[in-house]
Structures are given as C-alpha cells and as structure tokens.
Length: 237
Image (cartoon, rainbow, N blue to C red; front, side):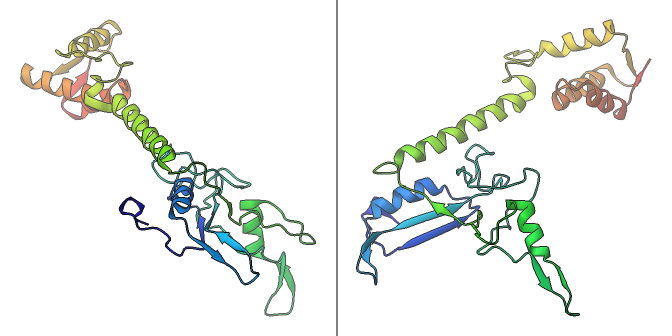
C-alpha cells in the first residue's frame, strides 16, 4: 500500500500473520488509512481486518528484540525456552491417532501442540495459536511507527556505548572519554599491584602495542586479556 502517493482502497479483506517480523499494529493502522470496505454475502458491509498470532517465545514476532524485528504483542504460549516460530496450528490436532497396525497411540502432533500452547479440552476446543484481531489505534499510523523506530535507536545506542571504541564511549568503562587512553596505563599499574607481572622478550614498543591491543579487544575481561597477552609472546612471572 503506497498511501503516501495516494494509492488507497486496495481490496484487502483480511490479513493474517503468524509470528511475523512485520509490526502488525502499524499494518492495521495503514489498513484503516487504505479505507477499503466490502459487502459480504450476508449483506453486511465490513472493513479490512488484520489478525496476528505471536507465541511468547517467538523472538521473530514478539517484543524481546525491542523493535528490531516484529515487536508485536504476544497472544499465548506455554513455554519460554522452546522454538515456536514454526508451531502455529490452523486446527488443534487430535490427541490420539491409529497407527498402521490399527493401534491407538498418542499423536506426536498434539504432544508438540500441548508443549508449545498448552493442553486443550477437546470437548470444547479453543485453539490458542489462532491469530487475534488487531484494531487500529490511530488515524495515520505514524505514532506507532515513530515509537518503533525510537526503540531501535535506543537499543542501537546502548549496544554502541557498551562496545564502541574500546570503552571510550562507554560511561561505565575506565576509558570513557579518555582521549589519551590513560586507562591502559592505569590497568597495567593495577595488574602490577595485584601481583600479575608480565614480561616480553621482544621490543618494548611491540610490547606496548600488543598490551594496548589486548586491552581494547577484551575490555574489562581480565581472563580474555591475559589469554591474549600469553598468546602474543607475553609470559607471567
């Protein structure tokens, strides 16, 4: 739908999403802007409708990644540590099936369904994996689009600050805004005071380069930094 160019009234009656990476709320808002309606065989007039199903552990569709993927509200689920992205069912499977020998056995499909979505009363079955109606919340969809983009921006900034420039941009790092990287010298003094003394048989300038490189690559992780030093010719005294 290219609504920005005035293309509206596109004949979309219903859209269904299952664990989608699309933000369904924004899509629903766009559908309302599209303005399409139709008269069904029952004689009633209906607007376009959008439905969404998102298992709570489905990282593609849910809010876990703060808007980098679907960022949709979850609609159900019975497990947190399971792979559910391919576990949406149009119908609740039967609990039992007949095998090739005529024996009644448990249905593996239902067992998988129950693990992902929970047990269902088959006398009054309600399929919890079916998509639910998503109603539009504003007139133009721009509000939710901007919120989604803002969440992505905040997450990006957080990741960048944590790892950017060897700690230079991380407020919690000793190297924060340290233009001269004096934190490297402070760290070496800290190692000396704690009894961790390293020697290097090569040139002193090479030793300084290697030490700084290991510090920048491994940050405050002393174990990885020590491993890096030992792998590059240093030895602990």
